[in-house]
Structures are given as C-alpha cells and as structure tokens.
Length: 233
Image (cartoon, rainbow, N blue to C red; front, side, top):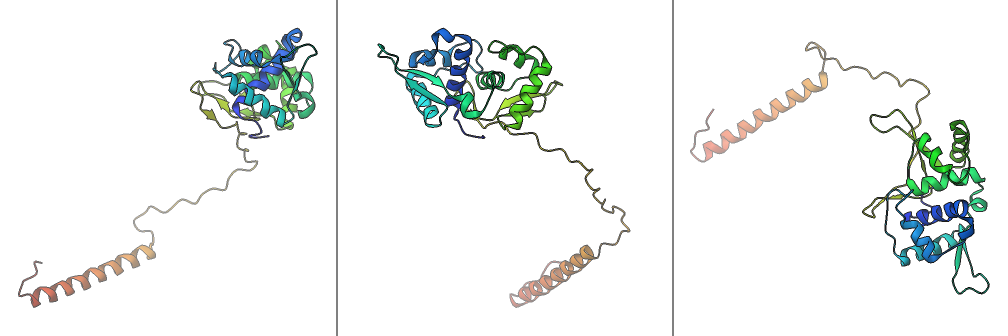
C-alpha cells in the first residue's frame, strides 16, 4: 500500500470517512464541505489550507483509485462525494475509523488514538484497539513505529500515503521497524593491537616505499650533478 495515495488524497479520504461516521445527515459532502473539513483546525495535524482546486483534484484522484465516488442528488445542482474505503480496502467500521484517524492526525500512541478514533466508532478498551491495529498491520495499512525520544509508548502510523507538514512539504510514508535478529550476530574478531603482532603486509609495504624513496634520491642526485648543483642531504 505504500504510496497509493498522495498527501492531499489522504487528507480528503480521512475527511470523507470522518464525516460519514460523525455527521451522517450532512453526508455525502459537497466540494466546499470537503474543503472545509480538510482545513478545519480541530482534530487535524498538521492544520493545512487546501484550495478548492486542490481538494477537487484530490477527489478526482480518489475516484480514479476507486476510493471515492460522486453523486448528483435529484433536484440539486451540487455534486456530492462519498468514500468507498470500506469496500475497496476490505475494512470493518472500527478498522476504518482507526485508519481515518491516522490519516487525519498522523502517527499516534495507543491512548490518544483510541480516544480520538472513538469519536467515530466505539473502542471500549486498549485491548480492543490492539486487535484492530493488529488486523490493519496484517493487511499492510498500518505500521508500528518506535517510541519518540524520552517516551516509552510505541506509535502507529498509516501506510497509504506520505504526511504533510505545515509548510506543505510531504514526508515519505511510514516504514516498518527493521526486523530484530532472532539470533545473536556473530562476534567480530578483534584486531591485534600489540606491537609484537606480525603484520607482514604492512612490513612489505614499508620496505617497498623505502626502496622507492632511495631510487628517487638517486635520480635527483644524478639530475643535480648534470646541472652542476649539489643535492642537499
């Protein structure tokens, strides 16, 4: 799933899922509502400012990737947009809520992730969240990250898209922790440090260099004599 979405598409997909769960009476969303949801200051990290054109392009991209669709309600001239994430990604409602929260706020520790995702679908305990995260990781949509410096809590991040920083620059999609070796690495032999240790290769190189220096001095001596000069010793 790495790189399937760009950062704009990820934010808009998260908004569609969130609004589907939290404000079903206002869902599907118009282009303007999708833009407002993408730029709102609560439950977003980072807070961004997408233009209407950027949100429109993101919606088109989601439709091309079968993650969203558009409808024209009867009697309305405004097109509305809905997500197809549950069907396309094969997720249940809890999995979809957790993934949407990661799309909207980036990497999070379990406690804050559970509190925020519970706005959309009930997660009664950290154990329930752990089960959801395990399924999402098995499907390749979420990855476990190491704790931040000074913290002992692991974090979880989505793998569908890079995240956007406040300056608009993307950061690559999260990657899994390197696999820990199951067996201890073989010991690396220590180099001998004693001055009496045999080092034939080094000794041969020194002898060769000394010979080259001697030959160079002989050639310089001959050159000096031909010029009537005396080579300083």
